Length: 114
Length: 110
Image (cartoon, rainbow over all chains, first blue to last red; front, top):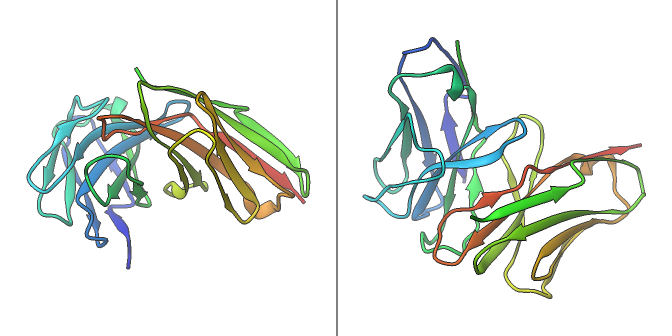
């Protein structure tokens, strides 16, 4: 099993450009999550999907949209990138979607917005 | 609001010098407390989940304990390969979200 995979590994954007970060998991998990990690801030939840067909906002959703394409895939879209969105983005998945569950993380996407 | 505070922020240990990391939390009903290890440039790697006060879990040189207000991650006789940032997170009742602390950066010197 590959676990949680993310593409791309690294991306440079100019302010105002758009892009989609891709995430896939092969563990048959119901829930999937997008986090960002910034120095001195810890991991912060952007959006999550408790099950296929549902999505909910997390702590810092502004400037982002998500799509739960199917049970395996959960994408994060930046419509108009801003320098404040320079960060490392992690996707995670968990088995039940009902809470009290361990989340398993992907390797991350490093995004630089100029 | 759920809060997680980890201390110390950074710790340098000699190989073999045991120590403990602290995770203090404030949550309205604890559903679970999680410890992760993160190496530079990598994603967090799951270590332990603790659900109730008094619970303990061990893995190799690591032992996690839980009280009603804090968790400790004890590192016994650490080796250089234990160098990493250790992240603590809590999940509250009725909430799918994990609230993360800022991490404990551990360096073990040979």
